[in-house]
Length: 289
Image 1 (spheres, rainbow, N blue to C red):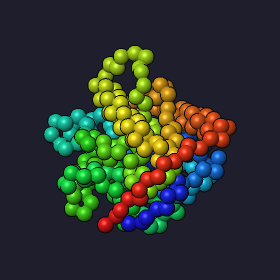
Image 2 (spheres, rainbow, N blue to C red):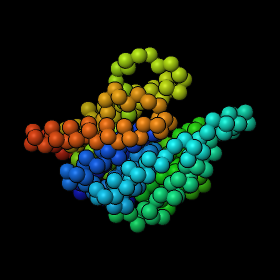
Image 3 (tube, rainbow, N blue to C red):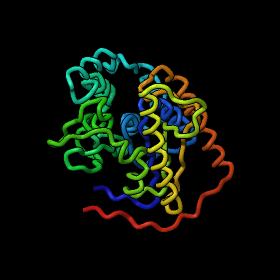
Image 4 (cartoon, rainbow, N blue to C red):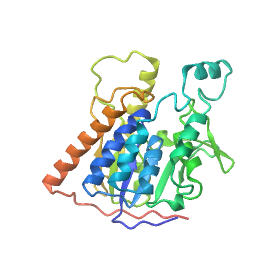
């Protein structure tokens, strides 16, 4: 396991489904300001965005990611209603088979293995077999990204090393915890979740479930920031109440990208104008066996 120095900067890229398009705008804002990571932690859709950035962390490459996102739809991922209805009737383990997602990832990943990336990447999943968090950073890239994106009940678990793996968002929703465990001293959290006050009550089952998970994720992230904010410089890039669409709604990609760019730029520029850096308390380096 690689041991990072204390001065390392990480990008922690969260889950969020279709809202992950906002992370593309955030990445553009960061790269335009010459902020690049020493390593990346990606969770769920953040694993996919992280894998793209890790190949080549420059502005031209991030702009090409915008073009890829405009190709994404429920149909391109084989997430059509009749598949879900059929699989529910047949009592399958998930609403969708995951073939569309698997093909999309395989089509757009630029390399086959973690070791071929330009920037070290760590993807987070849940190991159902062992009951633990799983962090992948070596070997085949595609299965690790797919495992991190396998939302329980929506996509089937991914077998890696003879064990079942699913989306890591429930154990580390933004990747922040893992970035700190890996020794980052400065973490830019690219968070596409929203857990603030709602202007109107939620009406659909999907929206209620989705927002409930967003609230849990935000509380977990805030707890980590409260516990570690004196030891690690954490820059939390997160959206406003405009992010109320469902995680599987891919109809607002352009708006998400521009909104992500807008609020990330505002946060980063305000931080730069203050020219203020927090005094960091000592933190013990992790020990790996």
